[in-house]
Image (cartoon, rainbow, N blue to C red):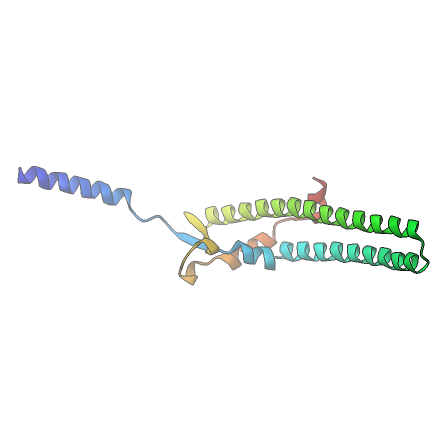
Length: 163
């Protein structure tokens, strides 16, 4: 009976340890840093800053016209300019939101492809997001390596917006 119990215990413990064996290499990446500091991320930030500045300039011009109409007490022109300002602001906001959605989805897809290719090429079993990890050894952080690879990926803002 003791032999049977001992044999069962050995079989069960062997099976348990085989099923709970540690996974292979694990790495950490901070995609937020990549979005902010990569060439593509910087280009997108600059693109939206220009778009926003152009919109502000357009609104400033309308505001200057509105002030002149106000000085002349031209109520009809004043109403038209106020309506035009509201429509311009709405169009700008909508355009920026739509383009942000398109570009974020596109760049996210390309980044995930870069991460997966890196994982496969470096025989890593799991790459975790840094912001979802409570604590980790900084030696397994591959953010800079991924960013270098991601910067090599072709990404044209205008082409992405036309898709």
